[in-house]
Length: 169
Image (cartoon, rainbow, N blue to C red; front, side, top):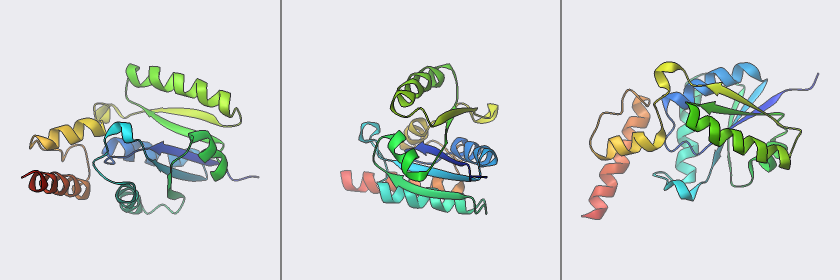
């Protein structure tokens, strides 16, 4: 029987507890889960590609699961899924707005490659409001983000904000 490979793509800027929830649940659906860390300049990343990959690797290593790999990519998702031998793309959904966007994206992806299925996982109710964009905004105004990210990620975000403030002075 062939190994079932899944891809969970995202910018992970930064990786949140919501992302980690989807990773923990998504790995149960496949034999190998590849976390695809992608570039999206439109999202004004706080961290560079290599920094985000290292951050995700560190957070995933804490799970102690050997069936998860972290891979950076900068291509169409369906091309990346093909290159990884994935049969499944896993997407996290927080609410109706996410669903509408993901529904359209899934339709386009099926036009590009109908051999890859998309599976939606609803975010845990306690984690639904978490979005990387909001985490960065809260942190930029000095708010406490410890309920949304791991302690190490919190340190990374706070340090980056302090660095940007020093450079702006």
